[in-house]
Length: 280
Ligand SMILES: NC(=O)c1ccc[n+]([C@@H]2O[C@H](COP(=O)([O-])OP(=O)(O)OC[C@H]3O[C@@H](n4cnc5c(N)ncnc54)[C@H](OP(=O)(O)O)[C@@H]3O)[C@@H](O)[C@H]2O)c1
Image (cartoon, rainbow, N blue to C red; front, side, top):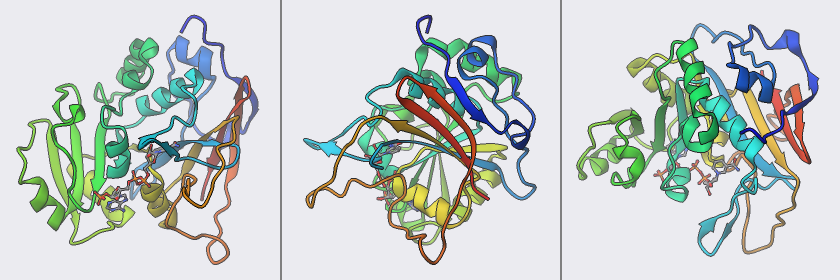
């Protein structure tokens, strides 16, 4: 952390982002000011975070393994940790869990050097020590022996269908896991996912960390308030054998339902860009 340089802020719409969060000094030094508008009355404020290559690739595989699009960039991990530290729940699709089966969606897991600062921020925000880790699956094909479900410090939630619940109940449910049913069959509506979660545990802010199928659904239902997008300065390429989607898949917006974002901030670390867009 000592050697990590602060992000350089090239542009910021200060007046558009609301009241600044009380960032501990390490985080304020590295990120600058961070503010969010209050949640709408009827639902939590929903942000999302992705990394893409310059040619728009968010998912690439080689030898059956998912490739790290950011190249393990430390600034990207620092920002991921910061966003996780600001929310009540991080939601991912089961595909993302299957591809990152060791992962835990907590601030300290993604960027351990700032664990103390992230915890301090959560305390200041009056939040639980770790965000809820929420996995969405229609099928219920989720391996409950994965480390995420056995970490006592993390409360995990699986949001699924009636059929998915039946399949999951064939395994022993870990004590830190809670099962919620948000529909008869998949894919579940993003709105149903949020409402089901919020009924069980009220949330002010939620972070969608992918993958592209889940994100596509949230975008299609206009439930993403903001996108934090890291642009990694590399080209991934595509060919007929590998589709390599961007951060949205299985949804079309253009031309019938175009989605335009408004740039809220632009930060830089070396050749990496950190973009923040609002979608209304
Ligand atoms: N570049 C980035 O920033 C980034 C971020 C996150 C993930 N990723 C990558 O994205 C890849 C996975 O992509 P993906 O599009 O398959 O991801 P995904 O959305 O995480 O997973 C798809 C699966 O999640 C469940 N799911 C998603 N939306 C659902 C809905 N509305 N209702 C019910 N279930 C839903 C389904 O699970 P069931 O099959 O169990 O029904 C579906 O098959 C991974 O390789 C990961 O590394 C990249």
